[in-house]
Image 1 (cartoon, rainbow, N blue to C red):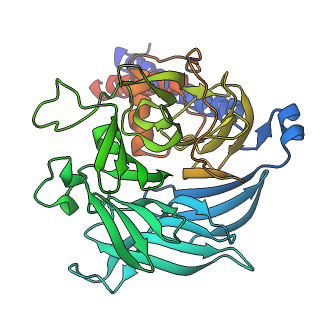
Image 2: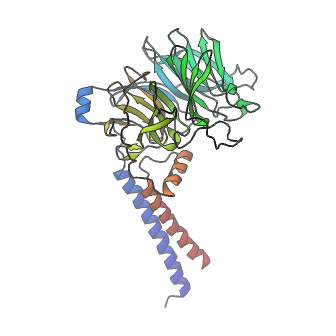
Image 3: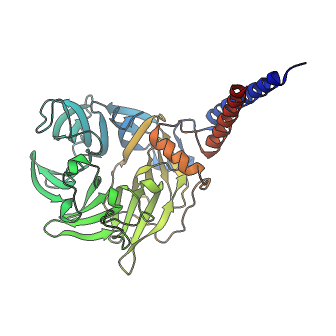
Length: 426
C-alpha cells in the first residue's frame, strides 16, 4: 500500500500540475480572444471620411527611455519613420511639410556643467522627403535622463517655438536658436533648492491659445494654467486645494484631473484633457462660480478600458482621437464613446501623442456640452484593477491581459505554490 508520504507527494504533484494547466489555459485563451493588433473602423465612417493620416510620436518600444520614433501612418500603413533619438514626444507638422518633435538623446560631448557624454533634450526638425532625416536641432544638456525631457514644442506665428522645459520647470520661447522669453514656475510654486535633481512639477505641455496666451500643463500639481506674457498666471484650472498640506504645496483635486497630459483648449470655458492617472479622457467646463468640472468622461472604448492615455484631440468633425499609451493603440470615438476608427500598434510600443492630418491639434473645437458620462468598459474590480495598473506601469504587459487573466494567473500560481509547499513539507 502507498505510504502517507507518497500520497502527500502525489497530492502536491497534482496541485502543481493543475496550477500549470490553469496558467497555460489562461495564456492560450487570452491570446486567442485578445486584440488582433490590426486596424479597424466603422465601415460607414471610414467610407465617408477616407483614409486617415496620423502623425505619431512614440516615446519608446519596450521602454520609457529608448526606441523612440516619429511616424506617419496612412490608414493601416506606415509611410515613414525617423528613429535616431532615444525618445520622442509631441509631434507637429509645420507648414512646409517638415515635422517638429520634442526629443531626448544621449551620446553628446557638449555637456555644459555635466560630465561627458551626456543626454540633451529640446526639439528636432525632421524633413520626411526624400527619406526622413533630422535637418535642425535645438537642445540643452540635462543632469539625467529621467523626468527632464522637453515633452512639448509648438510653432509660433513669428517663426519661433514655445517649449515646455521639464528640466528647469519653465516655459520658454526660442527664436533663431536663442531663448527670447521665459516663465519660471518658481514664480507661482515653491521650488526645491535644485529642480534639476528631482521630478518637481513635470511641466509637460504648452499650447498657444491666443496672442501672448498659453495653456500650460503642470502634471504633478494636477493643474492647467492659463499664462499670459507680461501678466503671468491669469487662470488656474483645478484650483489649489484648501486641504493641501505644506508638503503638498499648490495642488489641484486629483478627482478632477490627476497627472494629466496634452490638454486641448476647445474655447473659452472648455478644455479637453487626457486625464492620465485616472485612466480616462475628460472634457472640463468652467462653471458660473469659476470652478472647472468634468462634463464628459470616457474611461474606455471598443470594449477595453484606457490604460494611461496621454493625448486627446477633438477633431473638427466632432469626434475625438485618443492616444491610449499602455494599450499601445490609437482610437477615435464619437460623443457617445462609439469607436469609429482604431489602430493597434505593437503592444510593446509606447505612443505619446498623435495628430490627425490635416489639421493637427487645433485651438478651439466642438464641445460635447453637458453630455452623460460614458461608463468604463467592464467596470472597476476592487484590488485587481489597481494591481493591474501597478503591474502595467512597471512592465509591458501583453495587451490582452485584463483583470480576469490576472485573477486566473494568481489562482494558478497559488495552486503551484501550495503544491510545492506540500512536497517540501514531506
